[in-house]
Length: 52
Image: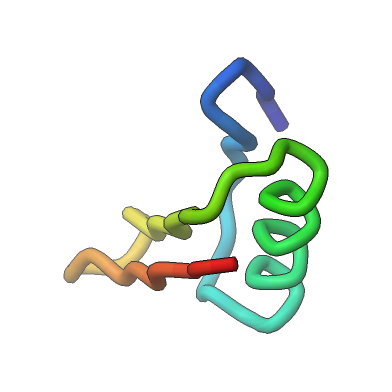
C-alpha cells in the first residue's frame, strides 16, 4: 500500500463496502467532501464516486 497527499493506493479484486468505508473515513479525517474508488484490475474500469 502506498500513501501520498492525494490518498491511498492499493490493489483490489473488486470494490466492496470495505473500500467504501475506507474512503468515508479518509474523507471525514481530511475534511474533503468527494472521494473516488478506481479499480483498474478488471478489463473495464470499475469506479465508485463517494460524497460525504
